[in-house]
Amino acid sequence: MAMDNVPISLAVLMVVTGSINTLSTKWADKLESENSAGDAQPFNHPFLQACTMFIGESLCLLVFSISHFAKKRKQSQSNELAAVVDNPISSFNPLIFFPPAMLDMLATSTMYVGLNLTYASSFQMLRGAVIIFTGLLSTAFLGRLLKAREWLGMLTVIMGLSVVGASDFIFSSGGSNNSLNSIITGDLLIVMAQIVTASQMVWEEKFVTKHNVPALQAVGWEGIFGFVTLSLLLIPMYFLRVGPPFSSNPRMVLEDALDGFTQMKNNPMIILAMSGTVISIAFFNFAGVSVTKELSATTRMVLDSVRTLVIWSVSLLLQWQQFYWPQIIGFALLVTGMGVYNNIINASVCKCRRGSDSEPLLGVNEDQSINDEEGRPSVIH
Image (tube, rainbow, N blue to C red; front, side):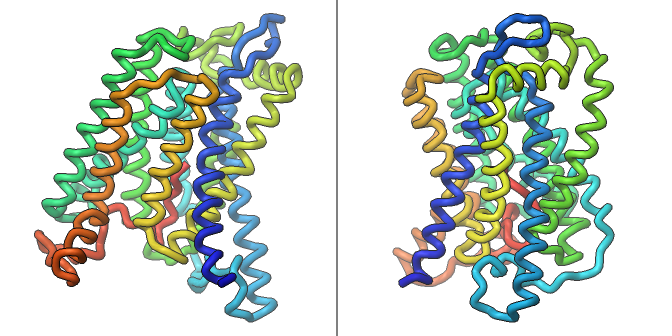
């Protein structure tokens, strides 16, 4: 019975920490604090927040090291924590994670800028666009042949994204201090960031997975490279002037880290929110990898859909946005499209109808899902 509770606990941990990750970031965006000019302003520092996300990813390397040495010391297969590092550690150059870390840094920073401009629920839903770009890039650079169900799933996801975007356009005034142009800009930035995320996934599948690196170790290295690089980039960002809506700090630069630290000092709740991002992203990646190992990658996709529903519900409860009925349709289309793409819906229908496996429509093994996360170090933030 205790063993049966482990996958359930991991699933709950993944949904809870994944939801906290997005909600704590949005909470920090909405908190006001006195800035370096003495004015009370919302905390608009997406690149500084992205740094905290990479700190959380870096902690995965610490978790991996602890669990690896614990496994090596105890030599016991019953160690649940070590279950995520069952793969033998191969020799590799950590620099293989530098290119995907740069893509992750670009995507995360862009998404955080978009999150500051739009709703948390839209942020989470629009990230479903990664399926479309991953499928297309996999066809172009990995030589994959997409099955008919995958094309159908992508088309359904596009319909869902269109509904979500349209609802933001039509109902742009409720529950947000941002203008219509800012909300639409935020939505577009989030969708564009999925192209970069998809490129990261394809790069990792083509150049990284052959090294058989445990997922937590890979995430940790990407976190270290991302944090170091983005921290250095904060220096030129301090002098790069931009206009609204991409900057609201007193100097109107792309990122004023010193102003961010001033606001954190004047309002400790911002520190609490950013700490939630660090801790939640670490536990979320651990839970996500564990769910993929204990259950399946498709289960992880379903749980990520549940996470979207939780974020949407909490945003409504906290009155960060108003209820828009078209988002129900958009969310349903997104979940349906993901289910069709990942063969969840098709497999369920086939089991009910025949009780046997369905035959692939095109010349690819049915088990080879384009966005299968098993053995892949890609992270869902």
